[in-house]
Length: 492
Image (cartoon, rainbow, N blue to C red; front, top):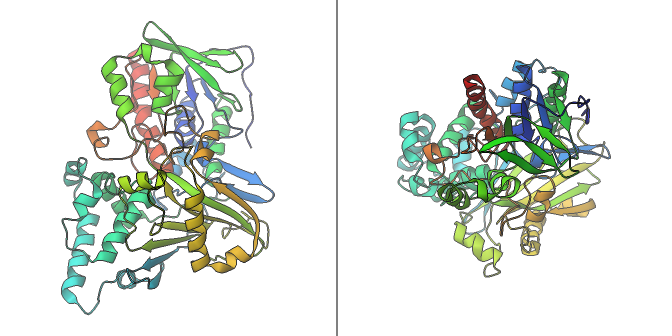
């Protein structure tokens, strides 16, 4: 798909250089290329997508990690594809729903098919339909979340989703469902850290536009199309190429230097390599003031994903997503630190089990690729064995037939991420699922917006200027940061 290393010719001068062809970088790149700016996009991977890169191997099309391209309707993906005129190059697959399993404190399990009624969902999580007061209060709280005015949402950036939700009278199971879904499930972050404002925003998006967006050939294929379009519009894409340095002269960016010693020049650099990596590794702290460095250093990352990819020799799952909510799974961040330090073992944690192989042509006939995973701290040095043990025990309990048909086993965890995402160069960092967290104290007006104290330098991706879930947050950042870039260009 990717036309690699084309259009360089004899020129090393560009209007803009983008470091990283992840969702944010490829999105802003194609929008700028469509405006006929001379674009160079550089990525260390063999194709676009970053952490969301799709692997095309042995008849399978899959991502290294289970991901979500929500919302299903009115997505930024669709908006960009339409704007650049490539809407027919990518085919979205139908949403087939999913299964939710709630395990109460007595170990009893109830299943809810997401195609069933909302009343069935409430009953699954322990709402007593004959208790009209409890039922009414629950519906009232959910309606309040779904209709809260944007001005009221903006007041919630400095309160955690857990603290916010605990103000309302909710049955235990419903509280667990909301906090786990719109904490670890949505943001890969514990609910005592997640910004209540971001939780409410995503709750409203999910209620209005659904979830489960996925594409034939995988989510990463969308970003492959974006980089193909960059080149079709006259831009250049360099893959398997690592940027070692952003060149700064007199407080302004002037270009980049790659690992092979080549230099490319542009007055504007847009980094999709992560805010901390850009500041501390690609540029160097000597170019920034102390207070800015302290602010960047203090920004928090989200959690990582740890678990299995199994190739099984028989299609077993008939839905793309199965989520287990054990009562007691609302772990706070300190509990994840205890797990990382071996003080506590995973025992009542949120589990995701699923497959993209149920969508047509994404797996060889008669086979499936199954994910099973949970969250952990993003430290690549973490011992993942206790997490894998817990994940496997839960799969054995829920779908034991999967383990009887495993043809190949691959595990993944924080150490897997730097190979395709941000490098691991700071202690305890590198394995995060998305990047900077949408946590209390760094969203809303306090969120990194994509600008920089260095003239001509911008940031894009989950580390800058976006709202939403993972992949969609990164693309959202592109739509916001491009306004800053164009404003800068117009000032010249």
